[in-house]
Image 1 (tube, rainbow, N blue to C red):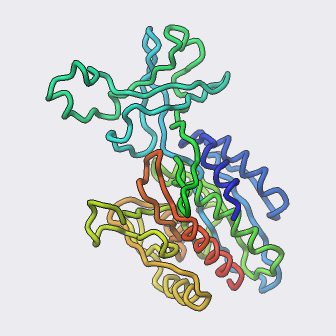
Image 2: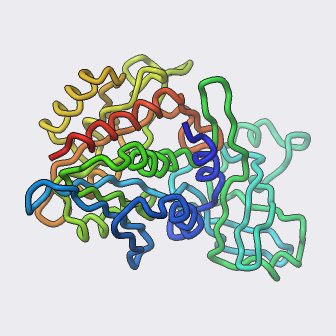
Image 3: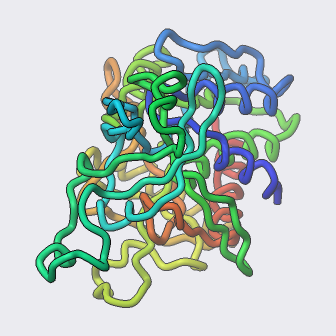
Length: 346
């Protein structure tokens, strides 16, 4: 398993609208793997592998893998050099206290620390200690004081600054949502190798998913797939304090065959096809439904005249934090089912 690629993908900054570095990394990895590659006006990377044999009108299969991670954009810099932010993507403020961040500027990357405005614990009142600040109350300190404004501009990208970790069978990092999908898009095509595929395969690394599936909508209209496969992470709430019925997935039990979320309902026939294929191949899986949230498969389903769509997902603990955690066996299962499906698709 190419863990080094996943590490490099996760540690590369790329928030919605600023996916350039991630796209460049993917381009370097996929050299020679596709028959056509282009970047669309929004910044999504569209990769096509032509059908190898089959009929004159091959089935068009689209894998949607979003490149962006949740993060921030600089919205204001005080005269003292404190940086205020606007989020791009959904954050729980409880996870933002005392974080190290990276401010990505035109002249280079700056280290910073994020904290909420207000009194520290030694001089805080009991009421202060109970308060959970809003996201807009957090600021970044670069240590440069007034000189901060010489390097940082409104609109610059800010991401969490934490290393990728391996802990037994677990992989931990920021941005596993959704560099997992970028990894799967690349590794599934590598796994397919030079096999003759009757279908036309599109692997699209989309932009701006975390702010409303934006890149997926435009690229799906461009591709107009017959089948759309949204590849993403999902919740794994198999942890203390969460009732069994709310777990969504359990780690180590295989990939998630995604049936429903608030953005789409998967095609019933596709669910049955993937279920039967995984069972026949001995690939572990679990059916998943998410009470809220959406993913790029919905955009493929609703593009132009519509498409059959499904989600292939990897259960992730502590999602939308710097400690996102997946099980490498679930990741392998997701890769294996994608290779198996593409290999037999007609």
